[in-house]
Length: 220
Image (cartoon, rainbow, N blue to C red; front, side, top):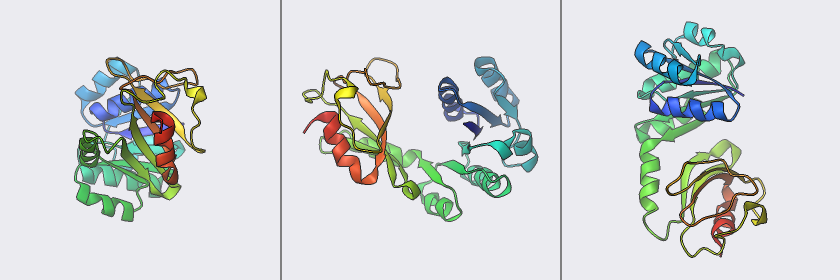
C-alpha cells in the first residue's frame, strides 16, 4: 500500500517507520525543514517538505495514487482539511485523522473522515486497564466495517500462558497485529509466537467477537 502521512512529529515518524518495516510505501509531509531533514536522515528519502493541507503539496506527494492518507499533526483543523482534500480532490479510499479534542469526533465523522483517533479517549481507556474488570481495552472503532481494534492483557495465571498462537482458536475475522511484551520490544506475532504473562496483544476483531477473543487469548 502507498500511505501518505501528514505530520512529521513523533506520531508520524514512528508510524512511518513501522509501515516501512512492514513493506509498505510511505511518505511523510512535514512543513518544518528541520523536522523533515531529521526524518530523512533516519529513514531515507521519505519526507516531503510542505503543507499537507495544500493541493499543490498533495499533488507533489502523489496523493492521487495513495491507498490511504493519515493526518497526525497537532492541529485538529489541519488534520480535517488534509483528509477532506485527500478524499474529495484525490479520491483517496481511506482517510484517518488524529484529533486532540474529543468533541470534534462527531464533526469529523459527519464530514466524511473514515476513522478518527483520539489520544484522550485512548488514555481514558487505558485508565480502565488498571481496574481488574477491564481486561480488554478498545483502541479504535471502525464502525463502517463492524470492526474493533482492541488491546487484550494477559495476566499472570492465564491458562494460555506458554501456548503457541497456532493452538489458539481465534474468532473468525480476527487478526493479531502486535504484541507488546514487558521489558522487550513490540513485535508482529506469527503462529509460533508464545503467549507470556504481561503481554499486551493488539488485535482487530469483529465487534461481536470481543468477548470470544478475550477468552481465547486469556482463557476462560
